Image 1 (spheres, helix red, strand yellow):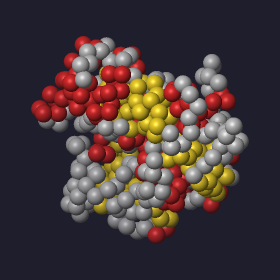
Image 2: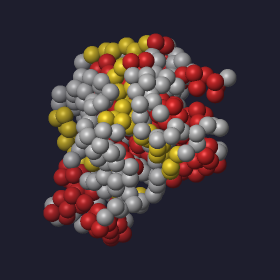
Image 3: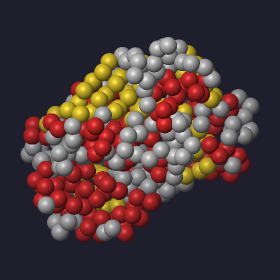
Image 4: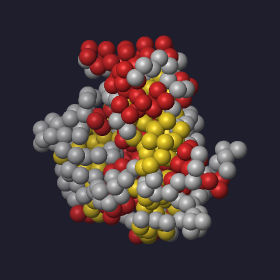
Length: 418
């Protein structure tokens, strides 16, 4: 009998039969999620199907995180509709200021290894950090999932990524992620599960793994699945189901030497336009942003604070920070990172997506150059098609804010680590 990949194993468990890549399955889901950009339409579709209560209100999550708090009366009305639906049905609502759905669902343990989780947001693949098969769908499909508790999927082929060696202490998971995205390309993993394994995982925290899994969709992937090496697995979960079989079949196997990875940035206007930071050193910037579902966690705020401690951002530069959750902000407050960054000239925004999608809170001006920890830099992504957005790690963003130009943050990190 042919061995299975992790994706095939999870879908087999949820479909009730042995499944291989290419097969269409109807599978039971363990949970679903929609944000304020997608939930109103999902609720409308759900009710048009005759729905009154979701398949499991305790496993149905709504998050007000994209345009949060509401910037105008139209969006305020959409938020009100989400609150009323949650109150009426008993589903779980993360209200404005609680944080980004993807952060909250992992942070609060709502997604666990081996689950099938569907979200009406493309970065739902973030949950692959805990070895869950998680993928994004449109609002209408999400409405159907809410109604039935099931989804149909074509089982994806798997791109196997083996991470070899240990990362340099000054290199972050974001640098490693950008190296992978740059090598695979925007469409190189189209409708694949990106299965990540290898000795480098010994260095990667849950936060780091969320960064890696989050940007799988920037390679066209259906989902990402990181093996749970060096992370605790909740009691009662069969760990064998979270690892591939020796005889599993892969579309392709890619090896990444983590020892050779150095600081990376994505050039405007595509996440896969990845270059070594040396190629853009000296590029003037006016706007720096730390946040989003890929790099708004405590580790990112602490990394930025290490560089900016006792220093101040350059004249003419503004640094905005949006914590991924209220809990992240509170921890950063407790350990001093909030004070350090505020004294350095940073402005904190409410926990949530912040400027990432360009709906409000920090839209750049014409011809501005932004360096961001975000996951996308397509033209107009942050709300202005005439701005230029570079992507990098929190260290890269902090160092650029400090000097008013893109620089290699490694010397600052080495100093902080010494």
